Image (cartoon, rainbow over all chains, first blue to last red; front, side, top):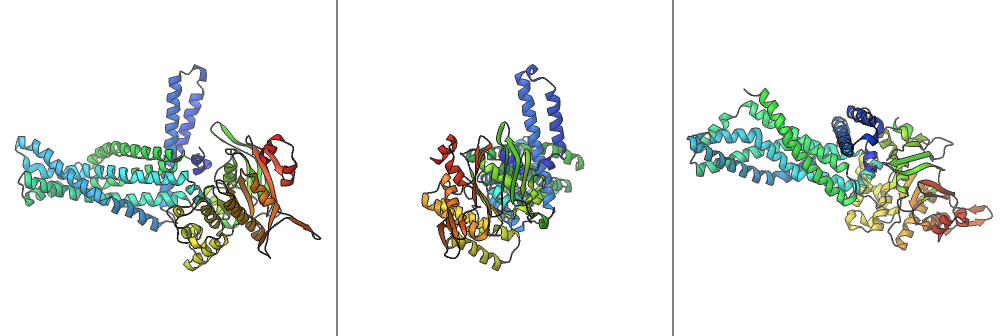
Length: 297
Length: 276
């Protein structure tokens, strides 16, 4: 796989701990004679080794990206262009989805609250659900689908048509020129998109509760705003920052390790979307637990 | 290693030198103990079938890949030991023409050609004048504002050559520059390479599977006074020859290296197959 080999400096790779782990793993497994290993064990060992190597390369890309995001040269024009593509480009999708998610939340929660005569709590529940959880996750998943895939396929196409090698041959670092702007742009834009999704979701929730539950504007907004504590807003801001890192770095990682022509671009795009979506949801669980622990009060 | 030290050739050293270079991808050995050298001003034609490792050899020579063993000495500096950050600086002094051109498809022709200058924060005036000069050299000035998607295969290669030449590098690598082109366009590309060799004294490696390219480069010279391409000739001052040598790769190893005249005289069945 020439492209993967060429991207990473072998000497630098060895500096990282994950590589040491992979080597330890290889040493341990090599002590078991090949003939005495059942086929299934060999398959499992092979899969674990491949997974560790992927994790190693991903960690290296993340470390490299962070290091290069704080040192010149920085590509401001490319970052702005990506902010436009990711932010402005995703806005209609975020507005529409946010509105209808807020609306459907009211319909579902109100139908349950009606059984206990607690319909007035709808605003509170919807606001908490949207700001803490649904806003960041929905915005994250939508941006994964739209931009995580776009990043992976764009970089993948550049790799298979040798544009990334051409960039290196012209003396430009592809991580600085391609990865850092995309990561920075997603980091800046996703929290903003989430805030917009939260607001428009609450607006959608208000419209539905106004017409189906006959709630007044002051009833709904008082409930919604008073239910939100500073901790909830912090949760709703930290999550999109973490999700942005996940989406953009995974998109870039799969894009840059593309091989195998146009089919390879398709495979990379699918992998980027699947892995980023699952990672966003899994990380959300642990992040929620952690943030609830800190901001429970 | 700083830019200032890496971009200077070491006196007495050949500009390009491979010493027992081997590289493998997984179980497949692509190059095994490859050794050769190219003097200043020489064009080394790397001949081989598709998949014989020609592109890998060029990428090794540019530091885009690292060998498993051996040394790759360019302008007296061992690329194998260089860090990626130093290699990026070093590559600013090497031109690389990729097989399909590898033009950035989101950038116009002018932006592609000026990519390196914009990275170096050159002034807009300087960028425009040098881009036009470079495009004029490859006779593509009329495509200044076009995008790669609007260009034919041959035009893309010419723009790629213009991009590689923008900083007037002493070394240029061409990866199958005539592959998939019609004979007339191929001849145009070979003439461009001839002009670069004979006008600018560029040292180059040219990977190709077409033996005609090797003979085109070895049997013709660009005569700066008349501005014409002439066959090599002999007069009272001696033979005016083209500084072009051939290296044939077969089964991951160097199979033949020498002058085209030696290649032509060879009775080796594999080389004859190539020639015929």
